[in-house]
Structures are given as structure tokens and as C-alpha cells.
Length: 452
Image 1 (cartoon, rainbow, N blue to C red):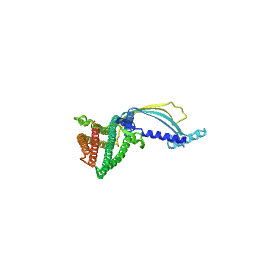
Image 2 (image 1 turned 90 degrees about the horizontal axis):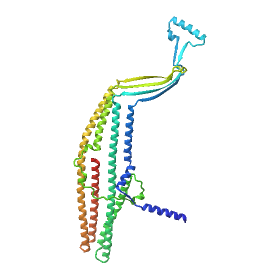
Image 3 (image 1 turned 180 degrees about the horizontal axis):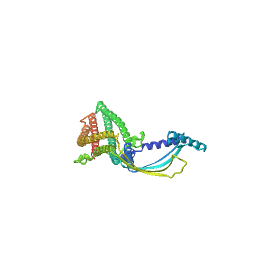
């Protein structure tokens, strides 16, 4: 018995939690998106990676320090010097060699010299590049350009994600409003059905009138079922986009609080003379040209001499490990002039020169397309506004027509089926108005995203 009570309490608690309504505003969704959206996370990581690459390039300015250690143990001495190697191979040298060899053997001395049996050593090398054909400077400029490009890409990603979230948000809001409209229409048809049923019992209407009302009622029910399914999918799409945790049981209780409304008028949105060359897309085209020019300079730098200075200091006992020696050091300078790679570097420079020209051609072309895009977005926005005004007038006309039909129905001048058709026509007009408002919202968001 006690276990049953506990289970019932848990079940009631779960039901009450499930029934709790979750309200989300547009700002709430955008805030969740900043923390949970995958594209925004990756864009931020792209900036981090570009900064790390910039730091990596700056290290080229600093000296390169390395520590080298070596040790060896040969099976046989690597160097052996005999008297023959010193005196030569003449008869006098051979006689002298024989005498010295006999004396050495009698005294237990080897008649030859051998070394490099084993040894060890360690040293520190410091090398500072003085000139590398401009590749270090241009490489750092290219890395800095990469950071700026990554930031622009991140800003563009933020705009695109916000536009995507707002579009999904208003789509859910529109489906919520359509659901409310269908509920109002259902309530009206229910009331009309009761009225016609009473009139049929009194013999004032025919059964056909009642069937017509029920037919319209079934059509609205079918629309409601399809709309509920679409509303659930739209909510899931929005919540996945912003990274909001949810379960399927939560979907019916999640409600968006914003109202669709008309949105700002076109004169409050449209710019008089937008400078499309200042948009992130245009700036990225400029950076692409700059990047190709820097890459070409780095390719040319491979043809130029490379100058470096350095120093090394250390201790080694590679020849006679048993002999104690003091550490030693030296300074050096190197000049490297490429000879065999000149042809290859010239071809690479030409290839980057062609890429620079391609980038400049792309910039000129796409800047023109951006100006065309602004005009297209402007036209779509004003057209969507005009369409919305027409749909609002249609709703007003349909509303007045329904009110007039109700008056005529109460006066017995029209049938219930005609009144039901008029109510469904009003529902259709309201749904079309919601679609027009959604289209206008999307046009406004697209204009903001592409021109600012």
C-alpha cells in the first residue's frame, strides 16, 4: 500500500511538471543560441585557431635555440694511423718502420695510433635569421589577415544564425496563431452546429444544412491535426537550432510569447544608399586579394638570399674521452642563395600572380552582384509589405462579410451552410495574412543580414 502511494505521488508530480508551461521569448532563444549553437561555437573556435596561427608566425622573429647531444661506441676504432701512413712506402721508410715496430713491441707499445672508439658531447646552438626574403614579415601579415578574416566570418555566422533562429521563431509563432484561429473557427462551427441541430428538431432547417456544417467542421478538424503535427516539428527544429534541452513530452507545453504583428515599416528598414563595399562579404573579398598578394611575395622571397647569424657553445669528448677538455664555443654567419630551386620558385610566383588576378576579378564581379542583391532584397521587402497590406484588407472584408452573414442568418435570410462557408473563408484569409507577415519578417531579416 505504501509503495502504491509513493508511485502515485511520483506520477502526479511528473504530470504536474509536464503540465507546467514553458514560455520562450525571442531574446530567450537568441541567448540560448549563443551558448548552445554548434555554428557559433565553431566560429569562435575558428578565431581562436587564427590567433594561435598568428602567435605561431610571430615566433619566426625570435632566435632559434636548440640543444644537441651525441654519444657513440664503435665496434672498431674509426681512425687508425700507422707509421706507413706517415713515412710512406719507400724502402728506407719500410726499414725504419720495421725498426720502430720491433722497438715498440719490445716495450709493450702499439706501433700505430687509433682513436674514435667512443665519445660524447653536448652543445647549445642559437641562430637568428636576419633576412629571409621578406617571408617572415609577409607571413606575419598573412597571419594577422587570417585573424581579421576569422572575426569577419564569425560576425557573418552570428548574423546568419540569428536570422535562422528568428525565421524559425516566427514560423512557430505563425503556427501558434493559426492554431488559435482554427480553435476560434471550431468554436464558431460548434455553436452553429448546436443552433442548426435545434433548428432541425423544430423543423426550421433541413438535414442537408446540418450535414454541410458538419462537413466544414470535419475539414477544420483535419487542418488542426495537420497543423499540430507541423507545430511540433517546427518547435523541435527551433529548439535544436538554439541548443535548448527538451523532451517530446515538453513540446505541447512550450509556448513562444512574441506576437507576429506587422513588423517595422519599409521606410524604417531600408537604407537610402547602402555601401555594399563595407559589408563583411565585400571585406572578405578584399582580404582574399591581399592574402594572394602576400602569398606571391612569399614565393618571390624564396628566390632571395637568406642571411642568419648564430653561436654555439658546448663540451665534447668525441676523439679522446679520457682527456679532460674545457668547453668551447664559436660564432657563425650563414648566407643561403637558392640556385637549383630558382625555376621552381619562379613558376610558383607566376602561379600566385594568376591567383591574385583571379581574386581581383572575383572581387569586381561579386561586388557588382552585392549591389544587385541589395536591389533584389529591397524589392522583395517592399513587395512583401504590399502583399501584407492586401491580406489585411482581405481579412477586414472577410470579417465584415461574416458579421453581415450572421445578421442575415439570424433573420432567416441565408442558410447555415452559407454561414459556415463564410466563416471558413475568414479563417483562410487570416491564414494567408499570417503567411504574408511571415514572408515580410523574413524579407526584413534578410535585408538586415546582407546590408549591415
